[in-house]
Length: 273
Image (cartoon, rainbow, N blue to C red; front, side, top):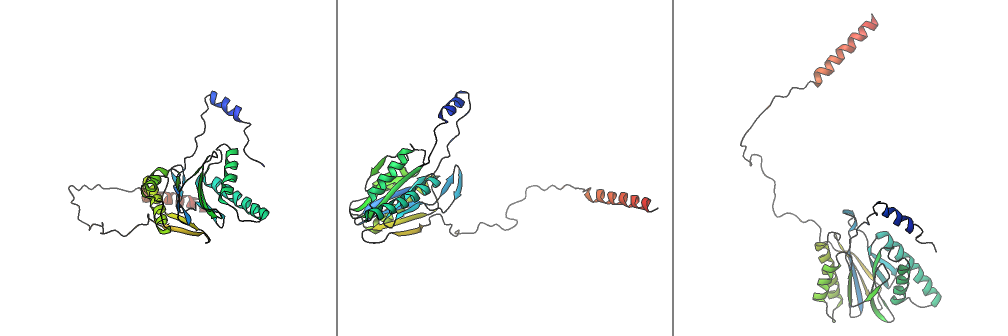
């Protein structure tokens, strides 16, 4: 299976020793969270895609479908998250057809961490994998180097610290579905307001036991502009004029055009004569 080539490592080290600077990595920004509740699990993400200090897309999709009962939220490089999740989706479908049973979340976790560990972090995909299977609701996180974590609530991305503050403050073991959805939405909004790389809207996916997953696209739109409470247009003359000065300006463009026309007419007359 083709992948990254590392045959230029020695060459790159030689160039660095000669004073050539190493290319800088483009910073990325995202806030993604996941939260378990009694009978299911919720994942959510913001919708801002950044390219360094440029907002490339205000309403991108960061929630990826692996299979009907397993979804994941992606942070990091958008193309890497998209391609890795598509690969896992097809691999799990083939696995389900081979075994004759529904895929499990831990199987998706194992395949993802083996794939990412193989590339030693060069595939920039940071994922929160969630879903329901015969063992119940499951929630995992996977870093680009292949390390994994399991918990009742998780957050990743540049806005993860702000989101985790909300999760740790308000999570409780007896959460209902509505409370879990409100908690995840509040955590994503904390990332939106406190992290420059996160912004725009809140996407959410709810997975419950024995029910199809429900994707809530643009579940909340906290950045929509509202009508201003008053008009800030001022009538002419509101600002006092302290001093007035005028200066005559003479344009020579018309004279130059007129003079050029006369010269052309004289040349024409000479030719006619």
